[in-house]
Length: 292
Length: 161
Image 1 (cartoon, rainbow over the protein chains, first blue to last red):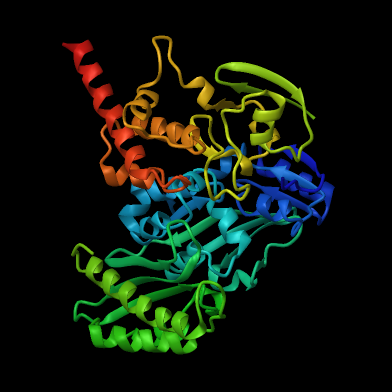
Image 2: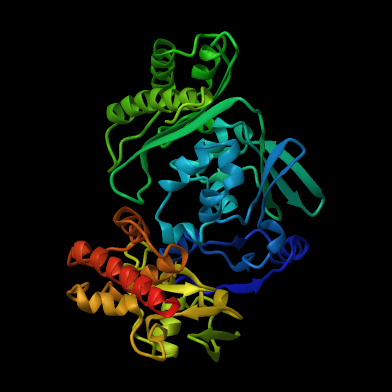
């Protein structure tokens, strides 16, 4: 039987109360929502928080809305809610693609958007999807709140800029009409972490050139989950197979995967390129209003 | 700490350690051993129960998290007039072999049919994709859920005609 080490526990019902408890219990306390990363780590004693603050009843963090020209997603939004949201689907189809292949339906009932980002697993699909659409996150602390672009959010594997005493409360995605977005993933079996995955959001000009593009990569060691060099290359190029192939080549070149039980380095690098091409192709088709 | 959890409509108050997992609370504290305990890593899904009506893996939920909430287990599936149609489907279509995954499979199937009374084979397969049948008896599990869907539809039609 896997049993976590003993800890203090409290249920919070508001952000203010959560921040108070974080201040009171100090840096060895952890916030818990879905718990599908933290509880397994606690069972294996890879994590030994002295206290858990349960935010499952902090209803003010559970919402999906459009405000200020942005899609705003509360940190406590469950994966299943993001998957099923018509509002999200209307603006960014990348999220339904990604959510369909994150864990399994029962885990998605429990796991949260904020938890996934804060866990900062290098293979986390939502990190790549949010990187592709140029998202930012809102982090609250005792001294107020700050907004951080996702491209500055991750410090390294399992590390983010969220400090002790702070809470990620919201993810914001700018709404830019006229584009298309998509996510593609290769996994060993249903519900597994990605061997590699790529997401793309693409906007084209009336002449058919790429006016704006975001490319996110998961599980291949891309800095900040982003294929920045491939993005730079694509802007201003025609939205064609040839351009996408070159962007894929650049994305693969700049990826930095590590060999593990999911595959060797050359295979993962190949996937980084190929999946970048597929995500761009699907995003471009959707931008043109075609089914993909 | 003291928690009060409503399981299958009945309220239970117990004093538990915060680190106690919901699956062990149900099995050991309440004696409800219909909920099985498998991989302990939220992969296999045999510990699936409903929490406020939503299927969750109870090996990855703390019992204290269920304080003040509604939990549903396989023991609560039976209706006043007999077995739930999902349970009947598993009987009729040989939906179980060793039975280890069965309680979780049936609860997920029940939640699926409540949301989608006429699921396709693909939708059923997706709904149970977080659960492993160690006998690999998926074909019959899918048939059992379809059986339940068809019989519920027929029963409803009878009531309204």
